[in-house]
Length: 428
Image 1 (cartoon, rainbow, N blue to C red):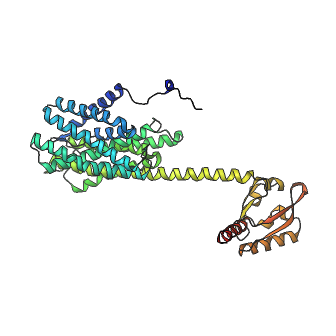
Image 2 (tube, helix red, strand yellow):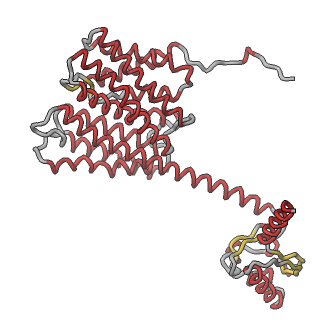
Image 3 (cartoon, rainbow, N blue to C red):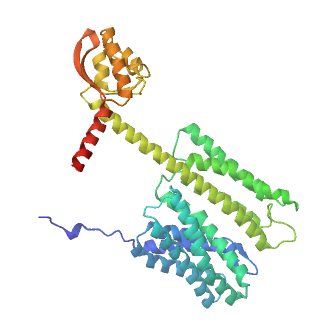
């Protein structure tokens, strides 16, 4: 009989203080984002809070989502009221901002199983196509409608600014939170001191080059539009070396600097004769390419490392079973070159792997008991290579000139013969 003691059951539902903390974090991020408002749309050019909200929803079970959405709505309402927006418009923005991460999280969870760590291409694809593109394309309609009703902003330009700003906010912030929740909190946790120092130096070069490119007023020259892409080698280096977490943090640093300087009227995307909204759109397109490239490269490298790790573990298990066999077991190529021998066989012959591997099998010490033994083995290998079954008893030589009798056979042929016999029995 199984006894169940309810006194020892503990719910993992977060407390009210946790939801207040989520709302507070969203509020502070929103306050910073409202400094990037563009006219005449009166919409923030970049909206990182939606990335924060999406990550929190993906990290929590669905039963907590209503409370998180309410916390987000209250935070947006307060932030807009403090910015001087009327209550009805603030509530409209709150509804739009609350629906955005909720729809995005729902779409992502339909195709992905938690935990979501941004370590697989499928996760990056879901973030880009389902969340940043799919859900934002729909919810930005609501946000643009509120902006049009409240401030008289043109609808489709407002929709474009809302869509791109929200999508970029998802790509910037959501991977940072998701990777931080499932990884070491240090920025460079892997590798030795030399490797960490080298990667840190590359990160410093990324930040310095971004400030250098975006932090000054440039002449109206379309050639200068190429300059921002000179930061990509540094970004991709960190993505390859440090995986999704390094890619996410580096992308966030790059995005914050580029957007901040562009809003201030600096950088290569600030072209004379164009509007501030056009400057923002240009930098958003650039950042979308940069962030997406970093996340994809990091996910590919992460999947590759995962496959290599799985292959290494599989090889260790195989070698453990291979060496635990009491029989003499070996693997060789059809031409008779020995490629593996288990510990039992090597210890009997007093041999090291380098004494016999990658050499003709009949030259190994076991078979040097007589030229006739070697000749017969060589002929047996040729027969087996032609697809015929080989089995015979033979005396082999071991360490200290000891001898023993073994039964030589082609194990692969045995398995195929058994498979044929089983198939024949089923037909009968």
